[in-house]
Image (cartoon, rainbow, N blue to C red; front, side, top):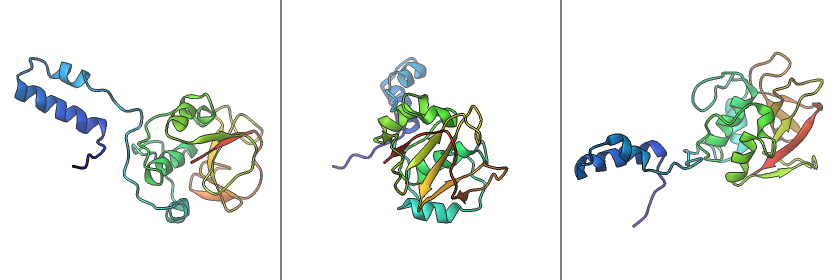
Length: 175
């Protein structure tokens, strides 16, 4: 028998149905008894970061829940889900993705490794802090073929490339 990973919503629905069959007097207590995974698996839509970037280029992407269209962190939300199969919720602002931040902790929990050496490889997720080119929220993008792919930079809210340097790079995550 093969077991399949299921999302928290599916597990909760199954627990509620089980409570009804078993005669539990509280649906809420059945739902509360489940343990939610920090990041359940999401359905992968692209086999590589190259395919994802090519498909999404020049689009203004919303996050995986459909909000924050054109924000740089929304690009990462979608890439984590559609390329890496990570069910991505609200993990914070761009700068929160650095090691030890709310998003950084979840990146680590999902198998990504943090680096600060700036020896970027295709698919690395780059994190910037406050700098001349960024705000206190930071910035986030994807490194691919010697360019940064990002959105919401220099007034452009679509996915596009930038082959210059952005100051304040804190580090990057590698899958």
